[in-house]
Image 1 (cartoon, rainbow, N blue to C red):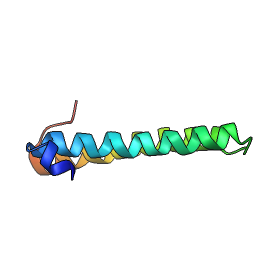
Image 2 (image 1 turned 90 degrees about the vertical axis):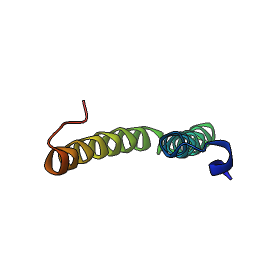
Image 3 (image 1 turned 180 degrees about the vertical axis):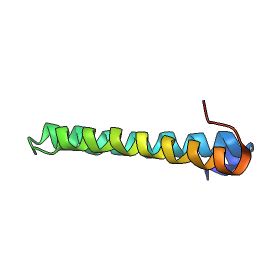
Length: 70
């Protein structure tokens, strides 16, 4: 479905990541609105996961291509 909207592979991957992030934010919002006390832990785990993904991706780029992500 998204591949029809984004023919470029990089744009498709970015759209998929943003859609996933939007779904996570929606789940956290619904939990916060329902007074379920997982919002703070959820935000912390999302940020930690993003940092880990960027760190591992940067390390893999350095190992296989000799350059860092940023």
